[in-house]
Length: 155
Image (cartoon, helix red, strand yellow):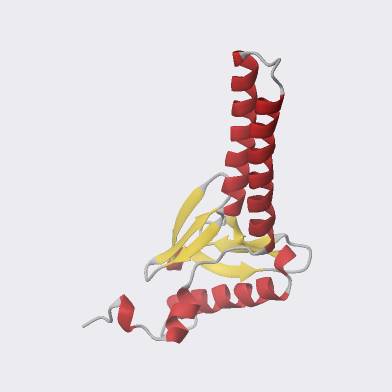
């Protein structure tokens, strides 16, 4: 009988928790709040704005907040079958067998996955700006890939 999620050990939960950036997430959430408050303040303070101008301000402010929310919500989620990577624009689902290697060398802003089809995929949920935390998260992802792709033979 498979273990229920409530029966999982703390080590397994820590290993399979989502990958999220820390620094970029804090900065973008703070900026989103600032843009939202500023947009509302400008719209209220400038009584000379027409309805069209107010709609324009609201649309521009809304688009900026949406973009910042997308940046703050980048993540990589782990499950038994694979990894779901949500980057700034696209979300991609990968089976464990599709991931060949995990790279996070110096100069890379994000972890990069080498895939079995020859493609690469950035994982923006692990960002260089997070320093030692990002290095540990890259090692955790590499451990997960190794655990899920291990075979009886090493061909």
